[in-house]
Length: 451
Image (cartoon, rainbow, N blue to C red; front, side, top):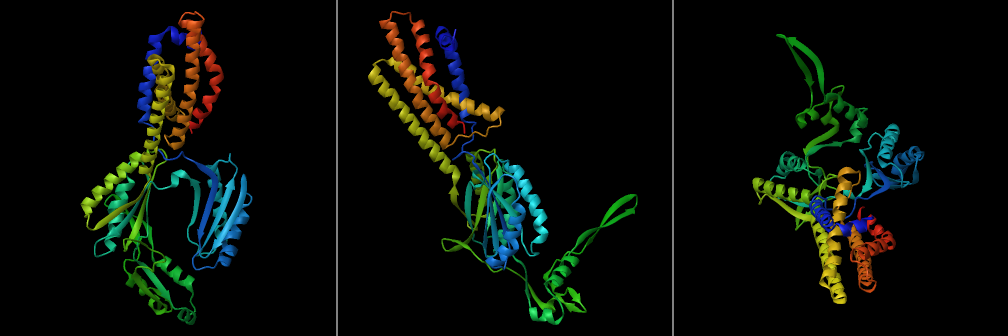
């Protein structure tokens, strides 16, 4: 006895199984994470090196070429290219599709550690990035400070905004761009340095040597072991100005030291006012829409506490809204298409019972797919999400499901009324016949919906 015949002979069991699938599928639907697109990782890595106050030729000679030489022997490298600009270098690696990108990232870091000694001393941090759709921020805010002192925004960011957003469930990272912070600025007179026989390295060495906070051992007193530290960190700019260099020469003799805002190389403005940008990214396994709702609610609380007239935030980009609108529009189109398909079937078959039989296959199949997607995510290694691609694959699969259902129902009626067979026999036989040629075709869109 095959599945089709068993289903027809046991209608109560078949109905209970169908209802169970629908209930589990409905529950799974609300537990699947919503995304705009599936998680795509292209086998490419980028290494960005900042080298300030340098020309493109100097960047190519001192940065790009040494890194290219040591990275050229990496395994699974498909192509390697570099671009040298003023003040920075960008190296792009493309690997085979089956390459383990986590292992590749480890190898690249090891090679960069080896070549670090060959790079100039004034090279700033080296950044390694990979192309991944999960790296795109889900929310972007433009922040404008309405208070009198811009330094207050720095304190509010460090003490309130950043820690409260970062600890929210599902938040991967919170970054800010364009924040102006005061810093120690050194304007060195090169002629005075040459006169006293000094150079920039001597100034750097003097600052690093005297700006220390190290352990000085332990002291035993009253049966207790106390830790002793030598604290020599600079607390004020005047301490650096009077820092001795050599033979009674102080820092202020060769350089002007100020504690002020550095000159901006670029800025962002909104409605004629200076602004900074806050970018929030979610964790890889978090629900995009749920995380965005938590962040928006927390930001409203922060604005109420700080003062809405002082902390002005404007939402610039919201990917969760794009996801909700895209999935909702696609779902409405699917429901409308299913309703029209059922209406057309009823017009041609002229049978309410037959229309209900074929129409019930649409929600049962869709909810069954949601259940399978959730189970694969729960018990397997698949990172399946509900996105535009999976929804479109499901719609195509359901469309292809209606065709064999109509063929099977037509054959059942033909065998029943023209062939004189008992109701159970034509149903089971024609279902088995219609399943064989049509089953490979819907399998392809179903597979695409699992991505």
